[in-house]
Structure formats: C-alpha cells, structure tokens
Image (cartoon, rainbow, N blue to C red):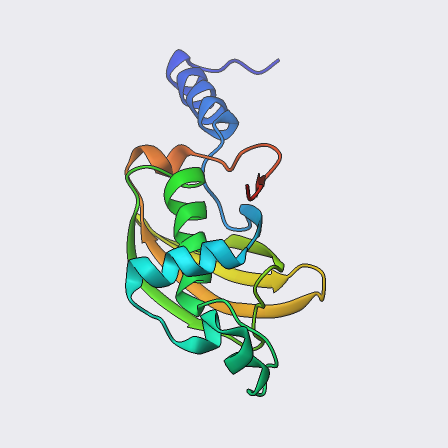
Length: 170
C-alpha cells in the first residue's frame, strides 16, 4: 500500500484540474465560409477607395488575364481579421503581423472558405497559419500567417465546438 502526503495529493489534484482546462494549443482550428457578392466588393471599394476596375468593371475585367472581376486581396484578409478578432480567439486580441500571398484569384460571386490553425505559441503571441479557398473550384486564393497578441483570458480558450462559421449574403 502506498501513502501519499496531503501536499502531494494537492499537487496531483492541481495538475488534474490544469489538464482538464481546455487551453489554446497548437493545432486548434477555425474556419469561416462566406459568398462574396458584387455588392460586398462594391461596398469594400467605396470604404477603402480602391476602385481598381479589375474589381468593379466586368467589361474591363474581361480584357484581363482573369477574364472577370476579382475580389480584393485585402477583403479576404479582412475576413480573416473577422474570424480571429470576433470568433476565435476573439475580442481583445490584437493583430501584430501579417504575411500573405495570393496564388489564385477569388472571383466575385464565389464562396470563400477561410481557415486558421494555431501553429506557434510564444507567450501571449499566437501564430495562425491561414488559408483561403475558392470553395467551388477548390483553388487556394490566400496562404500565409497572422501573428496575434492574445489577452491572458484568451490563453485558456478553445475554438467553438463546430469550428465553422457560415455567413449568408443577403
């Protein structure tokens, strides 16, 4: 028979409690799915002042290598900001750095699937590997990472159980 001192039992209980809490960890993921309409792109162009006709003028876009209007890359990055800043890790986190490439265009009226996965944790700085896909074509339209400063409270968060947020355009 083994006897444990009360201080050892307290340490074991504390460890069990800590292990049962769901802390943010490498591999946690969340995604967002949204159809990007012409109205969304027009609103974004008005808000930012980026009125490049490749985004807004279908006649102009037909003459380009893309053949039709494309969504602003920064619009896609904005959806990532929504995903991370509102849903997980959520309110209070602050963007520190972005590095993204756009291997393929996202066309207006396509559905975009955006994914973010925790890949590094350094103190309160979390790196999310991010990808966005044109859902119907399964084309990778954004790849990169976002570095996010977390609040102390966010260090003990987990993504929503279903890990997916779907926005429906009106």
